[in-house]
Length: 161
Image 1 (tube, rainbow, N blue to C red):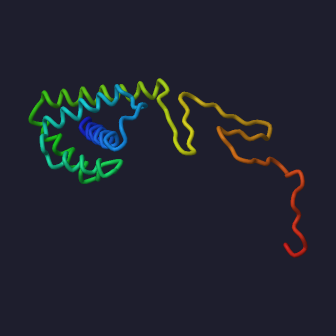
Image 2 (cartoon, rainbow, N blue to C red):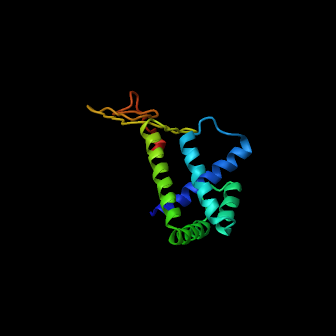
Image 3 (cartoon, helix red, strand yellow):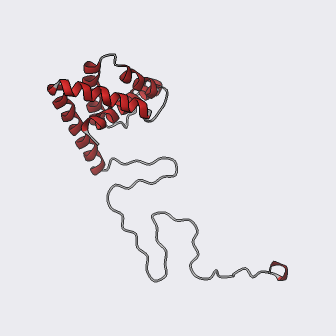
């Protein structure tokens, strides 16, 4: 994946976050460094592309609640950014530098324990070592488990075969 394709993903993610904040207010848990970097990237792209139809369509899709841009919008926005980058080396350099910063910020958040889970999920920051021996069972989380024969196994009756 090229730096421009990564930039498209970050720009769309920023648009989604912006649409979410408008709908429900800013989330206190948002990583402010990542959010600020995404905003800088969006500003850079917006200044360069202006009212480009692909960028406007991406904003519409984000506001409609899509988690990712449609394949067509992604392709068109990538093409617009690639065209701009081909004609402006300073823009290319600034764009790729911001993408690298965002990737480093995202990696740092993950390494420092920035994990979360929702619903019935589980999130773990770091390593987990789960082992079982001597006929036992082991898991991070496990429901009812019977190992070996049940204490009072059910025996089928004569009409159950």
